[in-house]
Image 1 (cartoon, rainbow, N blue to C red):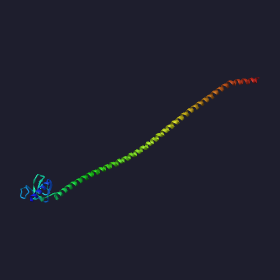
Image 2 (image 1 turned 90 degrees about the vertical axis):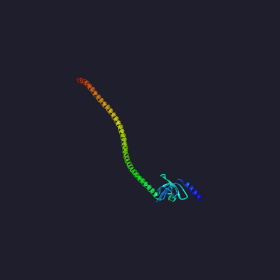
Image 3 (image 1 turned 30 degrees about the horizontal axis):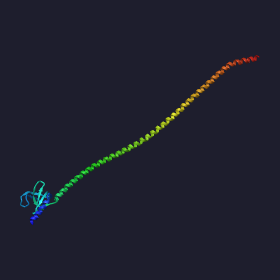
Image 4 (image 1 turned 60 degrees about the horizontal axis):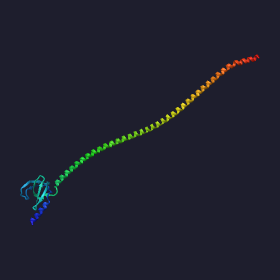
Length: 219
């Protein structure tokens, strides 16, 4: 019966190959070459919390294990457990906490840098908005000036047209004045010519009239 039980336990032990087990807390367990308390010791004491690979377990309460350093031996099964020791867990948690704190510090530094960049971008954006407002104001002024310039140009064009019309009227009046002046000169010239003719006629007629008068007196 014991042989059958041992065989079953051996089969179960083979099914548990490559399972990871840990030395329990507060112990240094010797690693022996064979599963007996008087067998030769391969290592004087495996520190508690050391991870090892479970190869097999026999019916007498011994476990065949291998260490990460290459040791292969036996130790009592009651020194082994399937979970890491509390000390190991605490150390692992401390390491993870320290790593998390370091990561949090790095994230804070990155956040501060991002905040600084954000402040700079915000300041730059405000400056651009201010410049944009100034440019918009200048553009409105330019539009007003352009509108005024267009109006002035239109007024100048109208004034030039009116000036041209007035100049044409002046030219017409000058021409008319010149014609009138010429007509007046011609009239005075005719009057002068007529006066000369009349004078000439009088000069010719007056001596004859005097002779006739004398002749009448003699008759």
